[in-house]
Image 1: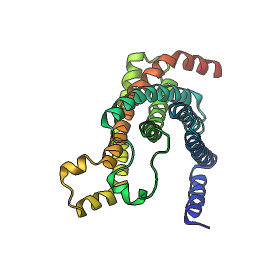
Image 2 (image 1 turned 90 degrees about the horizontal axis):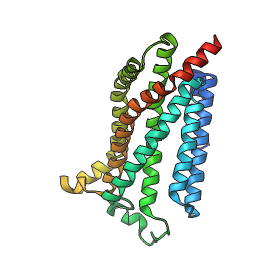
Image 3 (image 1 turned 180 degrees about the vertical axis):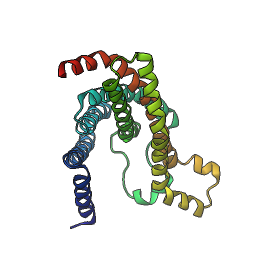
Image 4 (image 1 turned 135 degrees about the horizontal axis):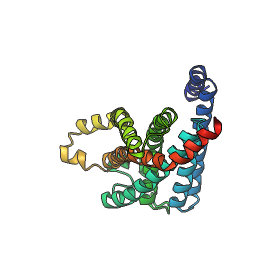
Length: 257
């Protein structure tokens, strides 16, 4: 048994022990998402248009993450709609920034590993970079959308007559409470993953300008910054979607009673 399998089984046991049935569903959603990501890589390798694969896979991953993570349709449907809107907005931003930054492909630090290999694989590295960026931010967007949507669903359950202005204000208030922790999670995840690279930069006596213009660092920094923007956009958009869906949610509550 490899260490990865052992850690995976440990994770499954812990998730089921803590979350019960919901923990098992969350673990299953993780496996499904991994399967779809692997399938997306295979499709891109077979020269299926990367943007088509990206959009299709992203929608499937969002649906699995959100709908398998919660049973309350008031929360999940709102979070799913909001996540789709944010994904489309962020995708437009990614296309502009990635094309402008030109940080796709391999850096000088990869030259030793690529020696003797051809990098002419017949696939646009720019499109691959866009695909990697949009997929990397889906989890942060879905998490923020679920948190805001769940909070607003509770507000509507307890105060069904609340007006849209107060509902929007409640959504922004909930968002402010999760933004700080979410942004810190993204930042420290980025810093921890690149700690060895930073040490390498210092060992090679890179200047500050060389570090800030390094292709590998710039590509990852773009992903993190766009993730920040995606989370910030998710809060007001989720609150707005909830105000648009409040009629259907209140009517459904009345029918259940």
